[in-house]
Amino acid sequence: MKLDAKAIRYLTSEDFRVLAACEAGSRNHEVVPTPLISNLSGLRGGSGVNRAISNLAKINLIAKVKNAKYDGYRLAYGGLDYLALNAHQKSKVIYSVGNQIGVGKESDIIVVAEATGGQRIMKIHRLGRISFRTVKTNRDYLRHRSSASWMYMSRLAAMKEFAFMKALRENGFSVPEPIAQNRHTIVMSLIDAFPLRQISKVADPAGLYSELMNIILDLARYGLIHGDFNEFNILIKEELDPEMKGKELTEEEEDEHIRLVPVLIDFPQMLSIDHVNAEMYFDRDVECIKRYFKRKFHFVSDSKGPTFAEARKMLLKNPGKRLDVEVEASGFSRKMARELEAYMEDVGVKGDGEASKDTDDEDEEESGSEAEEADGALDGKFSEDVDESTKRLEELEVSGPSERF
Ligand code: ADP
Ligand code: MG
Image (cartoon, rainbow, N blue to C red; front, side, top):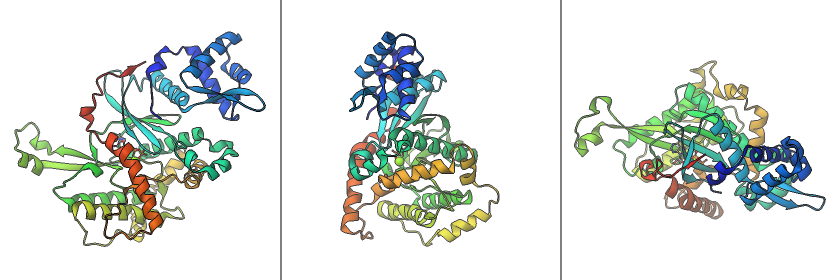
């Protein structure tokens, strides 16, 4: 679902109150009865509420549902988007909305700007968009758990991602700067870089490889495993050596003095090194990089590791500093983590890693069904995510026509 912010500036504060009332009512109603919307909005007089309801329904922020027992409305994704955008605008985090640069399986990535024109990224989590449609049996099961709605789960994913980004950033990891979180959205700094997936040549693959493995071990040192560590979720910034800045350089000289700086993104699936399946996830992160470097850069490391045992040893190097524990205490509780994890498992939410498997890898001996699955995911990723999201940011006219509100 693409974000269309055009209509937002025509909405009145009454409209927003009614929209917020629909949101509040959806917490315990599949379909929010009209009288309840009216009640929750706190607006006097039915006509104002009815006008707002029909405004909102016309632009698909809420949808009318005829129920066997009563008629009412359901909040649509667009409605939740507008509530979040409105909150970001009020707190001066976002001034205008620019282009969408990515449509992932479970998120939309949008360039936004603050009042002074500085660009930022808004990530809208959309759990349930694909999964609900494709996993019918699970959908029935989820319907009986009111807390398992798309709205709640998307918010959990955003809260989790924000909490981890903040903790990582504060501890010196190379990640975007987390700026704000509201509902199912987070706003972060824009990284002007390509994902590793788009980098066709690296001057020193061994150097980059060991840097990435060190990031995996550094995470372990703080009690964490990324869980989706792969070429889609590592952005590669090109930085010129400071002493070379401002000098006229030939292309070769430039190549020689450019440093590749990895920036890690995408944290909804982060897990603790104490998780029951920690070893499997750790090995998978390591394998993803090994496989990718072999295939893309024909680089195979001499050393076999790092192993999970080595990772656990890293913990001892950092006694007392456990980000898995810190994040739990910061508001994203263990209960929330478990709910999100159960949901992702139940409906088959897969990370980008599953999409990165390539069948042309001689080393890969995937069983038929697994290979097909990986292929399907790859298709989705290419048609929707990679092509769009990896356009160079300066080509995107983000300073051009954007929706102000
Ligand atoms: P998903 O969970 O859908 O995989 P990601 O967080 O991995 O979402 O983002 C998808 C794509 O959007 C990334 O591969 C990257 O190209 C782009 N992207 C995400 N965050 C940023 C950012 N802060 N700066 C620049 N590009 C970003
Ligand atoms: Mg990703």
